[in-house]
Image (cartoon, rainbow, N blue to C red):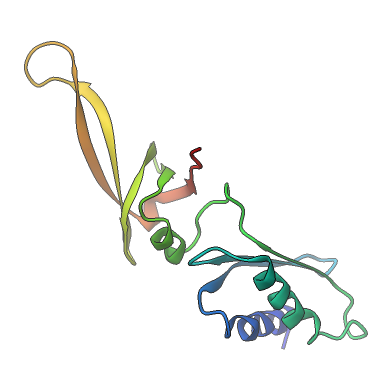
Amino acid sequence: MTFKEKVNVLIAEGLLEKPSIFLIDLTITDAFKIIVSLDGDNGVLLQDCIDVSRAIENNLDREEQDFSLEVASVGVGSPLKMVRQYKKNIGRTLIVNTNGEKIEAELVDANEDFIILSWEAREPKKLGKGKETVQKEQQIPYTEIKEAIVTVTF
């Protein structure tokens, strides 16, 4: 079993007791710095990071392989990577970059294949001069999304 496989198993075991927490990313550098990014259906607490960190650190032998360890929750401005992240952010505003456009809109639905965004846009009136506000909705498959970030509003 490789070092990365061993760390993956330890993370999975550490998350067994926390079904609402899930792994977003695991990186191990050439210098054996382990970087673990977590997210949760209801957010990630400091204690969650501590528990996962202990699950890894207490079960790896530094005599066998020296390492450093960093366990953290994904940041607010981090791109969404998993379907589970999209589902937990329904009702929030996203900035979505696709293969040709950038859309800032409310995420109204997410399933295993695509997301649905809704927003208001100003478009020329069908009759007469001027513009009118229209409600737009677009279904975007995950395969077309280059990057999606939750916007923070105060």
